[in-house]
Figure 1 (cartoon, rainbow, N blue to C red):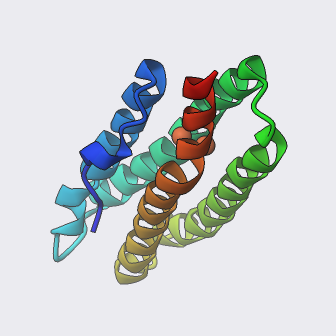
Figure 2 (figure 1 turned 60 degrees about the horizontal axis):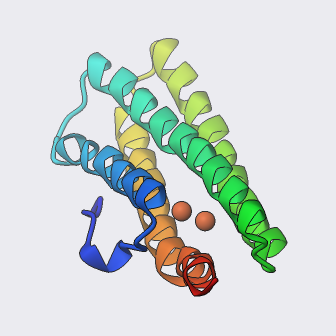
Figure 3 (figure 1 turned 135 degrees about the vertical axis):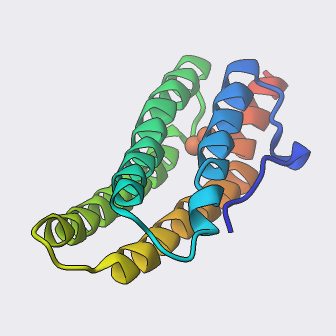
Length: 148
Ligand SMILES: [Fe+2]
Ligand SMILES: [Fe+2]
């Protein structure tokens, strides 16, 4: 489910490529969890941590990208920034939903199946979003910067 870095994602901007690679590393680190058939209490905490990593690394990365686009005078900067904000909004919504499930679990209800299903959706969303965004949107500003 979680996808590996592929060479086609390479934009030939060193700092950006390094950050994109790091994001796929985080995604890959979710794989071992996805293979589990049953979750224990520690796994539930681990899932929480992975979800935070996916969300927070996105935030950090967008900041780097937006600075770069402004510096380069990329004309589609504002609409690109809207796409980043869409990702953050979606992730924050997922986070809130997940926190709800997490509290239910901590209060003693065994909702691990629900947590697991939600976790898979969340990872799939982040993975798909990133692949599309790099290939279709980040590629545009990278092209612009290299033409300058
Ligand atoms: Fe990016
Ligand atoms: Fe981007």
